[in-house]
Picture 1: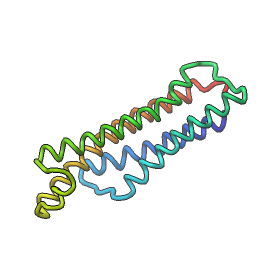
Picture 2: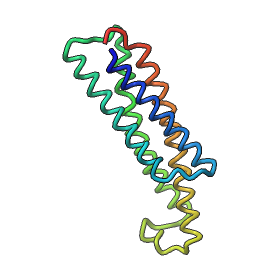
Picture 3: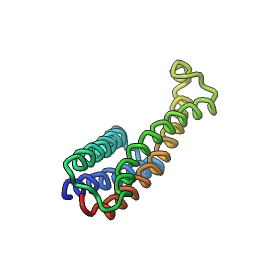
Picture 4: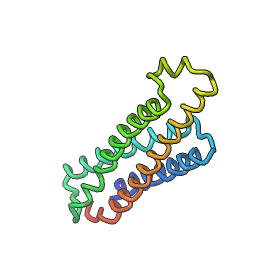
Length: 149
């Protein structure tokens, strides 16, 4: 039980920090590498949570509510969807600015390249903020349904 609570608490903390960095970036505060590192840490914690829940299940520690297992696995699924959305948003920004891939981006004047990069990062930050918010909700629900684990 304590391992599940600790992992969900860590998942909440990492995603709240990620949400703050994403919103900060959205409103003009550059997060730099901290944003991406925090994103990967949060994703790693989500995967570790699924592994821990699977191990505990195999050891005979079963949750009283079956929804717990759904709430435990969904953060990984949501993260995968978020990765796909971030990828698609980058393509959409490049299309919007009529840029043909990374080679086209490199050939742009610095001012225009910076505008494209800023637009892409804003969209990715927006998507990440929504994903982080959903994962915080799911982790809170996992904690409330974890009795018996």
